[in-house]
Image (cartoon, rainbow, N blue to C red; front, side, top):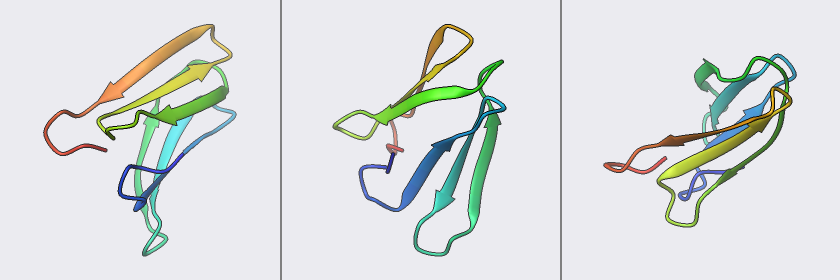
Length: 70
């Protein structure tokens, strides 16, 4: 999923981590150990302030930033 601006690309990995990339430079922005098992889905909400991830660990997690957006 892409951030609202389209600059940041979020991806989920089989090890349960979320990786974000700068789509302009191709550089790694961050890597977060988010779930205990692989991530099955992720999406950014319409106003760009939250990212929701779902994992094979039977949980949903919401990552949000109300100041700057994702």
